[in-house]
Amino acid sequence: MTDRKMEPLTAEEKKVIKQKATETPFSGKYNDFFERGIYICRQCGRPLFKSDSKFRSGCGWPSFDEAIEGAVNELPDADGYRTEIQCAACGAHLGHVFRGEKFTEKNTWHCVNSISMRFIPDEQEK
Image (tube, rainbow, N blue to C red; front, side, top):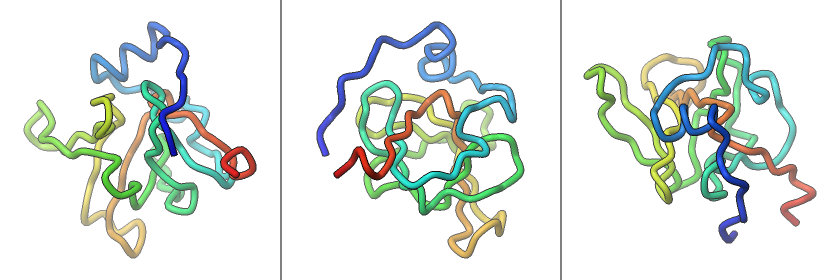
């Protein structure tokens, strides 16, 4: 898959994606969204997560137990406790990853801001 042409970021998107803010819990459009397809980076359009890795965590943000291989970088968060996740292609702030939470068999939880992604339904991928 190639990069997609993306519209310029809004002020709210810049705040999360570039300044590493967090959207309000339960406010994002993908929190309770479970259609088939892929989630791409809002900033550069690269694929990040497949819908079959999405699960209900109840935390207020979209949750995935696996990223597409090579799509996400993990870095120590500035708070010294968490692990930040960024788009490997462009460095966009996505959210955080946690391990050991036992939400799924993979025991990995990517907690992602909806505003950092766009969804592409399966039928548009073909």
